[in-house]
Image (cartoon, rainbow, N blue to C red; front, side, top):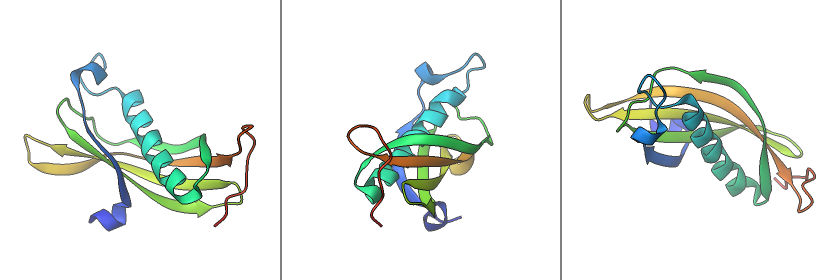
Amino acid sequence: MDAQEKGELVIQTIAMPADTNANGDIFGGWLLSQMDLGGAVLAYQITKNRIATRAIHDMVFIKPVKVGDRVAFYAKVVHRGRTSIGIQIEAWAFRLCAQQSEQVAKGLYTYVSIDDAGRSAPIHW
């Protein structure tokens, strides 16, 4: 799968020992939060407005992330609403030991555009 099919690269980071769970793999909550940040990057770029995470749908952890993996997060818009935007996010780990990338998670996140008072605000497409 090429990068264009995955979406726009929004974040790239390295999984560190401080982010592990009791099994020594990267904690799922860390991965979920990185995906949320990546989706927010794209949502803000598009809406040019304050945004807030409204919901996380269909979050799937496919494979474990290991310490030292370079993790890339790709996002693409899959829904445009009046005040919300749906973004598909994929996480891919580059495995140093194997010198290859594999998908480790995916999810659909919904962000809502908000005004300064925290109320939903229209997105000007």
